[in-house]
Length: 448
Image (cartoon, rainbow, N blue to C red; front, top):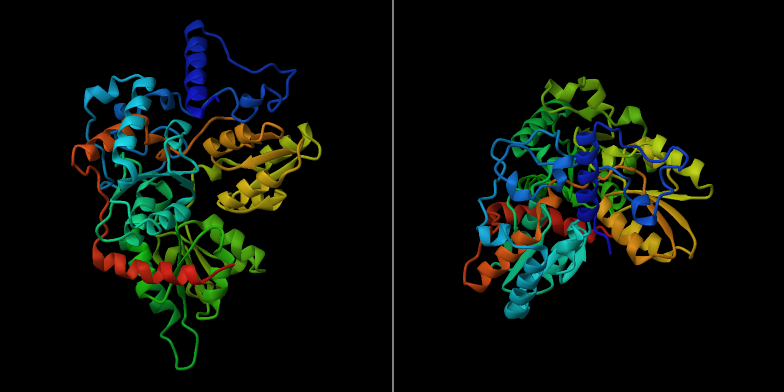
């Protein structure tokens, strides 16, 4: 199986060779972009950033999220940074790292469980005990009290949620502390509390017998601080699977919703419920009243925070049009973190688990274009060779931060645990965790 990392490395080598010869690398103009050999059909011939081929430890101390979809996103000054790895890991070959991971994992046994996100690179996922989306993995942590530690091969907010839901005596470890999330960082607790203050002043107090003026709802892809804020202010957490059910829950208790941090999931969910664009003002945290008038906020049904996923923002209607032109009858499915125009142009939209199940149920010979992270799309293609599956974006551009979990960090983490050390433990303060659990428990009760 050819992994995304191998494809990126190959793309970087081709692009470097092209620059060295002064040439211009283009695919054969007689061949449509998606009609390359099947593995390249899923990824394209080029990557969005040649630095993706570099080892992550070479940029761990550099500012920013790193190469990939989030490379242009601003990063908070206090974002965690990963310390240097010993050379015994950075100098090891892929085969040596795999052997060390397998040996350490066997020695640790059931004491340690490895959790791998759907978007994680194949070289890491192959070692995972559980593979799923952020909430599925947090649930896995909750359901295994026998484990002493969970190695979370995902990003920071996911490890926080696993720490909140796991037992107090269990450790949750993030192999690379630089694996953050630009979307989650787009809503800080300081900004959210300032927004709440302004909304409370603009919308007025709760009158006896009336619904709350506004209910805070946060997507799972947010910090523990934001989840805790929702928990102590009558709010709730949602996933991409139950966002509509959560909004219905919120509207039963409040006149309107403020939705953090992903504007696209909020907009797509509200639009499907019949809420108009005029009733969904965007809140820009650097502007007074989020850049809105008091009247706009009073008339709102869903106030959307100005955040987004840089992976899913890359998908466009033009890409869908191209796929339909080249493959008449293609089924297009996308994640609801995509812009509304893309979701409206697709044949279906849903969570990562929805996409996985759609492909699992597809009839042999089907052609499916997918708008979500490339590591998952590539893996789904490998699992269903009887289907033609390709990513809508023909350029390889993985999640910048998820991609920073490299086998070297996993080997280092497992061998540290074997030596009695607990590196990179993610700890959520109990006061924050308690309020977060309130919002998460409300979410668990809100079943679609």
